[in-house]
Length: 252
Ligand code: 13P
Image (cartoon, rainbow, N blue to C red; front, top):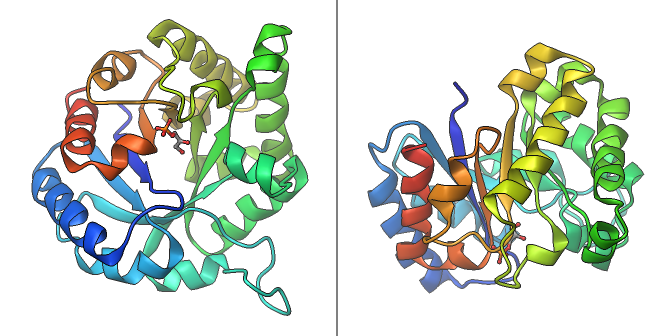
């Protein structure tokens, strides 16, 4: 039985005031909820503050990105070790917004994945196809390529200490959620790709769904056999919405 994860990706949103009310409400709700971990990934400056607001044992802190380098003359970058020091347990890598707007290639994503693990953190590796790729029948090839780029570099044993997230680009921030069947199909593709290397690792791997997850569709998505929780954007900025999604993860 895989333990669910519901992770909040605040992206470039928030303020100290918002962090306080939002995280306090999530912490109170998560406390005592069985079978689910709630991960909050705020912008870097708020990491320490948000970590300090968490008291529930099932709440963890995550970073939205890290540098592909450990240290040196890389102005504006933040290392995996630094966010680990600030209390993070997770770091998102390979988000489509990073791939698309900041030129992160499969090779950069793999390098960052390794940096995250070297710092003792758990990567949340995002993969997902564009609408164009789906319409051209390239969905499976795209997903397999993105997963394989990391598995080849990191080795299958390291996938044991990783979480995957399937985020179809056409569903992010659009209100167009993948149907539970569409999401399940891709989650099964990812799990069977990992199974080719190790059935044991595949069985234990948590695969989250992301893309317009809301309070009213989370339970149905999470009820699919290969969906082990969610990576939440917009709805993670609203305590009532996010708490309902965490509750859906708990009752999976
Ligand atoms: P939305 O939930 O806003 O669609 O964003 C999903 C996402 O990109 C989470 O990483």
